[in-house]
Image (cartoon, rainbow, N blue to C red):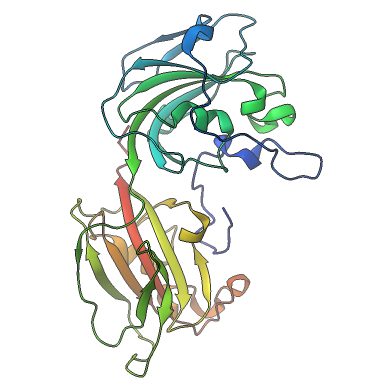
Amino acid sequence: MKCSLHRLICLLLLPLLLLVGCGSTDSEGEPAASDNSAGGAAPSDGLDGVTVQGEPGAEPEVGIEDGFSVDETTVEVLDQGDGEEVGETDTVTVDYVGVNASTGKTFDSSWERGMPADFPLGPGMISGFNKALVGQQVGSHLVAALPPADGYGEAGNPQADIGGEDTLVFVVEIQGIVPSQAEGATVQPPEGLPDLELNAQDQPTGFSADADTEPAAKQLQVHTVIEGEGPEVEKGQTLTVHYLGQIYPDGKIFDQSWTRGEPVTFPIGTGNLIEGWDEGLVGQKVGSRVILVVPPDKGYGEAGQPQAGIKGTDTLIFAIDILKATSPSAG
């Protein structure tokens, strides 16, 4: 995840402990290679040294016998869900706790943060987490043990006190799969907006202007072009979105999530984002695609954002798919 925009993208988008690049590196400083193939988890016979106590929906108590370790990612389904099957590149919503089997200490927990986490599966995730979740059904409650090779490798993860020989144990509840883009009724945008161009998957690729495009607006403009059927976004919620940002009307695309293949997550209406986002997204329905035309005073002000090529006089235009909204009390 690149941090190219101050106050917009440089946020804690994910709990970082499950990302490959945050703990495991090779001698050249690049993320260590990992096998992210689906269906790589072994049967549950190797988990006799792990006990899990507690009801689904609450943080479990995890007991691990001294000396417990595994040579391959091993999974036991504690409660079988009946929802959609998790795919190799899905973004999943989970509650989870991670325990270092060598020390018995919890190194990460969504329950402690008070909110489920959204994880984009694929090459950026530690391979054991991919192996454990791909092919599982939404609603499932499972325990997975990961050997070092499927976790953080020989480098370990010092920030979490994980050594290069430590087996990791996760207890995971799969809450859902985050949609990949907006879904709902199409709404015709007003005349004068730059045209939003789409690829074959109906994902935005940029805005283009023509002779009828109006000059840059001096006020924030909010246009819903796909109206979702979800609840309205509320101030203080955490949103998961895909987005594209461009200098108005058809200038440089300075950031986008679709090409990275990962949606982003952030709190809305709390002053952590540019004003145009905080004001424009609150009240929109989950599932919607929204176009925001953001004048400088609702964006980066007179200073602009030089690292992104944004001047203090630039108006910005965004296409934003609102995929999910979570209240702080959830989970």
